[in-house]
Amino acid sequence: MKGPVPILEIKNVEKDFGGVRAVSGCSFNVQQGTITGLIGPNGAGKTTLFNLITGFVPCTGGQIYFQGKRIDRLPPHEIFRQGIVRTFQIPRELKRMTVLENLMVVPSHQTGENIWGSWLFPRRVRRQEENNEAQAIDILRFVNLVHLKDEYAGNLSAGQKKLLELARTLMAEPQLVLLDEPGAGVNPTLMKELVEHIRRACTEKNLTFLLIEHDMDMVMRLCDPIIVMCNGENIMEGSPHEVRQNEAVLEAYLGGLGR
Amino acid sequence: MEFQGILNYLVGFAIMAVIYSIFTLGLNVHWGYTGLFNIGVAGFFALGAYTSALLTTATPDPLKFEDYIFGGNLPALLGVFNLGIDLWFLVALLGAGAVCGLMALIIGSVTIRLRGDYLAIVTLGIAESVRYIFLNEKWLANGSKGLYRIPKYLGDWVSPQHYDYLFLVVVLIVLVVIYVAVERTIKSPWGRVLKAIREDELTAAASGKNVFSFKLQSFMLGAFIMGIGGALYAHNIRFIDPRTFDPLLATFIIWAMLMVGGSGNNKGAILGAFTVWGIWAGTQFLPGFLSDPNFRFIMVGLLIVVVILLRPGGILGEERKISASAAPPNKVAPPDA
Ligand SMILES: Nc1ncnc2c1ncn2[C@@H]1O[C@H](COP(=O)(O)OP(=O)(O)O)[C@@H](O)[C@H]1O
Ligand SMILES: [Mg+2]
Image (cartoon, rainbow over all chains, first blue to last red):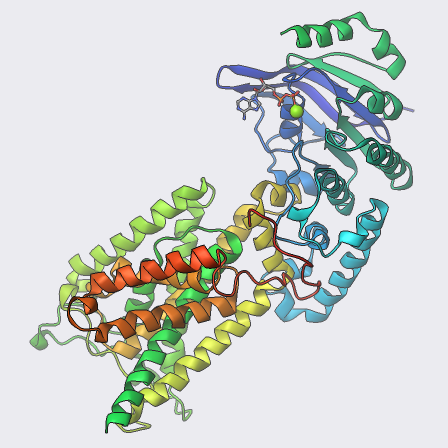
């Protein structure tokens, strides 16, 4: 038997923004069923890497494979359909839509999303809407936002918007979830819940997570393995214990702070 | 006599307000629901009007100094199908809508992928180009002499002095059909995606939506509606020439209607059309310089300023209910809405 096939393979990925090399020769794998952490100082290229994986920004070089299929060059919505969903470092909720509708818009293959759908198949559309609403309510319960379901998303607090981002990813029924600093700006109580939500989503819903986080406490408790990026490259990978002990990591962070 | 005159005036006013309501509904699909910045409504207005006019006018007569080469003569052609109702009108309206939809497909395919402001520049440019093409290509639509034998729909049903009453009913029926269709389509999951795109394109893409495709569909739907508005306009005035589609009366005023009534609200679009057209048409009776068109446009501009200051979202504001299947939001809109 072969070893486990990685769900995501990053191979020599590069990104130049004009003169700025945001990601250079980055290579690592994410294994199915893990909560993999991605850490590194500010400007290391973590968010850019997320943008490359999800197709929001084209790669300058290298390849990205998801479940063995090459996905760089695909547009964002195609990558979403493959089963990858991401959040944004700064939440981008749909402000003038309700929390519930922020989620209702997510599921793929809605008959009613065809312009003729609600005219030709009104019953099927209604049934799907009912199912999607029930699912959205479940997820809102899961992230403790259900009391705000009819609130404009733009009126949520910063922490609630983070939870809504997480809820959006769960609504997508993905295989791989990319979370960009899910804990930033979230108060400690909510943070504990967030960690719990992610862990439960991983085990109960059988999801794989790749998450960027600055809160070391959260990363150490939640992630294994942890990948460390610096200056656009991954400089090491290991268990929380190994990462804590590693000289290069310390160097990267201290160097990053010193700059 | 006096009363009759006022009534006739009001009927004529209402016909125009209804036709403008249709344009405003089309623009609402573009801007109010999708955030497509179309500042060339006049282009679709003109294309719809010319299409319907050319499909229905009789073959041009060189002895009458008619220089164009094609008149579809649909009333005579379709007259053979005697259904008791003039079929040609429906064909002309749908034809006008279809030509505009096709135009939107072409323009949209090349510009919608680009940043938002490109669509604005291109729609503005196309609107002016359409006008110049109809002006300079005399073979196409008689150049500056215009088209003036545009047939009346159901013209032989009533006497000419009562015809406007009948035509008001016709345009009202078209408005109601378009209103109901747009409301239903916009409140379906399809419309919800448009609103998601309006709110944040990246989030829509991150939710697996093909933003380009949805924007293109919205652009075509709005253009189709504007084309029908143009056709109704042509059959109401029954004379069009390139000057008819001046940007002030064919783009600016329609934007004013949407802003005043409430962007993102179909009832607001109609209310705005009646309000602004009321001010525009009403001020023509003011004495002296007050009835000068430039002054009247200033009045419309002032109205926009007053409404935006008092009610930034327009008189009715954006409709709160987003889709048919979910409850409307609880409280006030978020601050930057
Ligand atoms: N769109 C962009 N245009 C130009 N430079 C960018 C862009 N996005 C990111 N960068 C640059 O790439 C580098 C990596 O940024 P980023 O990926 O956001 O880092 P991180 O998320 O690890 O803090 C930074 O130097 C940043 O300035
Ligand atoms: Mg970042």
